[in-house]
Structures are given as C-alpha cells and as structure tokens.
Amino acid sequence: MMRSVHIRKWLLTVLVSLSTLSVAAQGYPVPAVPDSITDAAARCDYATTRYWDHFDFNDTTLLRTDYAEQALVDFLWLVKYGSEKGREQAVEKWVRQIKSTPAAYRYFVGKARQYLTNPESPVYALIAMECITGNRVGDKAQDFCYVTADGTKRLLSETATDRMTLLLFYDPDCDNCRSMIARLRNDNAINKAIAKGQLAVLAVYTEEDYERWRATLKDMPANWIVATDHAVVTTNELYDLTVMPALYLLDAQKRVCIKTTDFIDLTDFICK
Image (cartoon, rainbow, N blue to C red; front, side, top):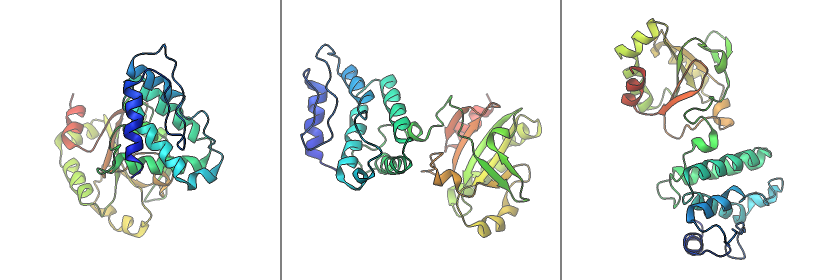
C-alpha cells in the first residue's frame, strides 16, 4: 500500500485545518482552499473538483512512477469526505480528463479498480466503480456491439427498444453465473414478462474462449438473446464486471434502472 502515515497527516489537514490545504512536498499538490470556505465537506469538494487540473495526463512517464499512484490514492481518500454531489462532480470531471489520453485512462481505471475492490485496500469501496465506468442508475447504458451465434451483429441501443432489457454479463465457467442463469430461467415473473413482450434478456459472454462459449449455448434459455461481445466490454472497461454475474436492468431507452448481483433485488424491481 501507499504511504499510510502521509495519508493520515494529510487527512488531518483536510478535516481540521481551515488554512491552506496541502500535502507533503514530495507528493502531488492538493489545490489550496480559500480560508473563507470553513465547512469540511465544502473544502473537500473545492479541492477535489480542481484536484487534477495540473496533472499532465499526456506525460506517460508519470504512469511508471509512484507519483501517479499516490496522487490517485490521495484523491480517493479525499473524495470520501466531500458531499455526495461534490464527490460525483469530482469523479466525473476526473474521468473526462483521463479519457483524453488512452494510456492514462487504462492506467488510472486499472489502479482505481485495484484499490476500490480489494478489501485490504485503505480506500476499499469509497466510491462505486460505476462512477468510473459509468452506467449508474439513471445513466444511459454504455453502448456496444454484440454478435449472436448465427453471426448477427447488433448494438445494445438497437435491442428491444419497446421494452425493458435485462443485460446479463456472464461466464459459462463461473459457478455463480450458472446459478443465476438457472434461477432466472425458472422464475415465473421473468418468463411471464418475456412472454408478454415487457422484457428482453440479453446474456453477453465477455471473454475470448469462443469454443467454450459455443459449446455451452445449448444450456442457455431459448427465450433469451445470447451473444458475445468479443471482449469489447472488458477491453474498454465499459462496465463494472468485478463481481460476476453482473446484471443491469435497462428501460426501453437503455437507461439503467438497477445494477445488481442479487436475484431478489432484480425480481422485486421487475414485479413492481
């Protein structure tokens, strides 16, 4: 892990001090906060929304040093103490900034995933991965192309435009995936919604063992759309697939209604 002593001292500065916000001289500098801002959360919001403004994302040499990683860790710690709105604004701005340079985007998303999904990390689960990959509730789901077994290509945005879509990312070798598929296959509410034209289920295999995928197609429900994305989703970090299976319930306009790994949450929402 990164410098825990440094982080604790820095957090003390963030939460207690009403003077200029700063970190150790060797670290990435946190923006100075005006003394007129006295609320701790507001000070964090001010700093985090301006945090990356002076980081040169085009300088890829920084990505091979501890400097960049420490800057990210400090940022993730700081956003924890801001307001909900400030946290969202800071992360969304940061994502726009890193997307301008593909190498920086891959590096920071990979590091953020490491810290946010590792239970031993000091910044575990401080902000959801959806903030980085998008696809939060209310967002338009990230579009991608998928291919069915007969070779038909289609965009997610073109699928079931008159009904809800249950987007299921799965791996046939994943025990939890097989269990979820079995429960969905046998659920009366799900099958009734499909039969009435209220719901489409799109199951997408996101890895690259196409032989294995084709060999298991016979095990998938006949009333589902079963496809592969040729690893586009994982390669481009379009969705958070940290826990599999990952399920996104989308409305007809492909806005995210719910993101879950819980069968009960899903069926309760559909049955409302």
